Length: 56
Image (tube, helix red, strand yellow):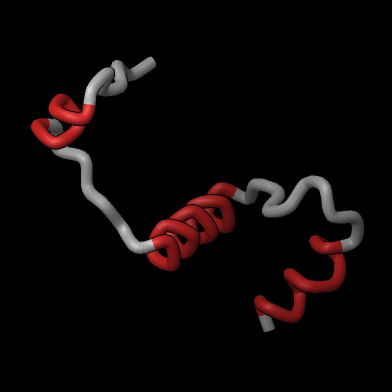
């Protein structure tokens, strides 16, 4: 498990990259689609109705 910065100074000195929320969401979505993971496990029917429409 990676060590996380304990202070703001450590965070600023680290190689942490601030990404816009939209870019972070897109990156996470692409990673889950590539891995075949369930996108929204708590939403029933999402994988059967929304995902096929997105793929088409």
